[in-house]
Image 1: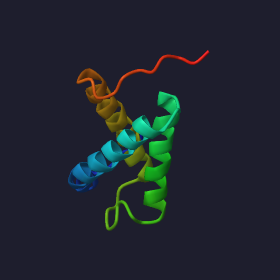
Image 2: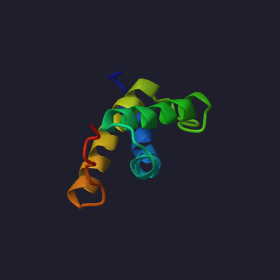
Image 3: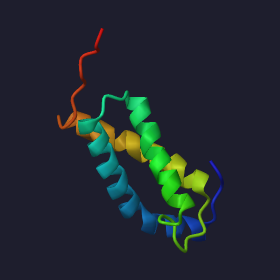
Length: 97
C-alpha cells in the first residue's frame, strides 16, 4: 500500500462513511443477485470503486492515492461480509456439482 501523509489520512477519514455505504450497497446487491464466488464479488466491488475513482465520482478534491483507497476498501469489503455472515444476513449457498 502506498504511504500517505497525515493530511491525506485526515481526508481519507472523511471519505470512510461514504466508502462504507457504497461498499455495503454493492456487496448486498451482489450477494442477492449473483452466483459469483466471494472472490469474484469482491473483485467486482473493487472494479466499481476503481471506475468511480477514474471518473472522478469518488475522491473529488482529495489527494489520496487510489491504490491506498482500494487496499482499505478490500479490507472494508471483508469486514462487511464478515459482519453480515455473523448476523445471519448472508448465508453460504451449497456448491452446485
